[in-house]
Image (tube, rainbow, N blue to C red; front, side, top):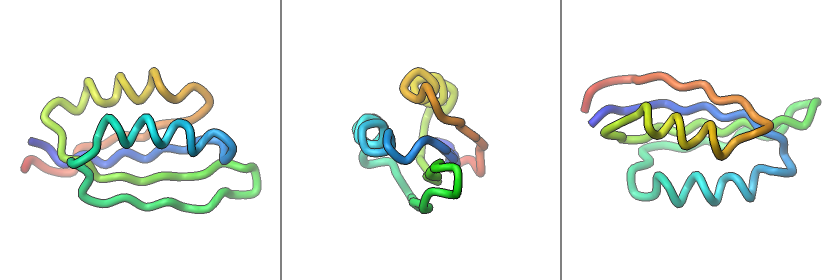
Length: 79
């Protein structure tokens, strides 16, 4: 198991629909999650720490879900 930090930036209007699909995928393995308000351009930010066996498959699934956003991904530690 690895602790992975995923930072997602996406348009405020699409946050609810995409967030429900993301949370259904990682439910039960989230260690910490932060929702930041939208900036002046309308982009919201979500930061999650997730326990994951295979973080690269998670990253691939998130990239398929998020079309108009940006994903930053880094492995924090081995659990």
